[in-house]
Length: 74
Image (cartoon, rainbow, N blue to C red; front, side):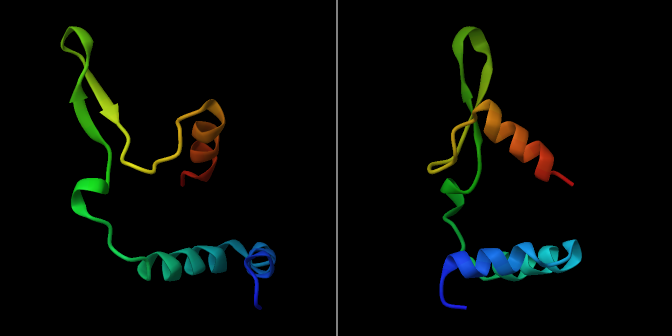
């Protein structure tokens, strides 16, 4: 396989267990991210409330993004 499209197509044909194994394999090979840029953080909001601020580069929290995250949640 030489292109990302071919790899994506091949991964779609895998059974769920092998997809999970592939995700674990790829995740283990990702470069570590700086600690300060890794996750969301709480920041002061108006009237003493706390707001959750997404890390740099995070996708926007649109309705579609949240729906997709919930569908992918175990």
